[in-house]
Image (cartoon, rainbow, N blue to C red; front, side, top):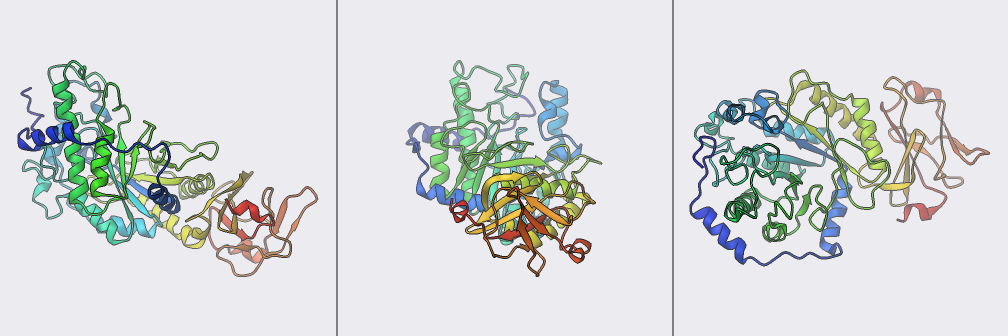
Length: 458
């Protein structure tokens, strides 16, 4: 197992963790969501808009986080791992990130503490493959413990904290062992034939999550990636791991992505929006550009696309976790900054129709998406194109305003005239002045109280 890319501390720390895992009581696997967790999931569903950040040594080359090394030669893998030796983001300032996220209207962050490649952006004691190691140039920077700095900065701005952590680790000799070829993303040996290796990996994973749960302040979400790490072949003892994590973070939401069961507290559709509302809490994670990490001259989605994605996701009961990869120097790409500020300006006008809302059947009618918060209903009109504004009339089926009540366009003061047409649809009249000088662009939210109050009591 002598290989220059594997430089782990194997003594006391791991030995103690192995013994602890063997004696720890299993976690509670309740068939129903306990009340405290339901309250946390209600909080999560109120947030609606979050920031996902993939960042690491792979950003140096514009690689899509970790995946380029799968199936590659040992030489390429070594060159990839050696990128840590040049990782030195001189302009890293997480306070700038946090202020930008807050300006964008985001309510929580999910940050990559460790991706599949195993490079840790926190000061772990369990491996030297970390940003604070002496052979990483950035280790001398006062902000070298990147995860601590990021969590602190976002917490200071009032955002929720999510820790992304990959259950796989392609740098670990307990996962990709150099005795055997690693031909795909999975563990490269039979864990049943080599239980001591797998036991060491389980303890290593347990130990790093324990570090994150005890040394980085209050954490709201543990966002576990690498869903192929699951029983029976790759059993990391989730019951014990979650019991330990919640011992330190009692209100922790756990997302064991794509695995199912009691430790996937909410679902995370990737790069897609479900066709229909899902019967459980969920969050679409999607890139602003074309890959998860920074890519030079990437093709970013327009503000129009992003706002309409947010509306469609929220209308189906989900959250939008929008991913941005910082540049190698630690700055957010200028195009991404512009998009975030424009989304924030839209949410300043229309946030009431987004935050804290729940779906309202029929969820969408042609170009109109419905949400509600308590008795207040919202109909959000989505123009066909970025240049299209408000038409002379907006029509929708589904929930109808209460007879004699007022309908308002968010961001505009005067009540709007409206009527119910012969076919049962609602028609809202848009005055010429409002069409010429609308309060926002990209999507327009109308507030009203529905005639059928039962529609907004669920």
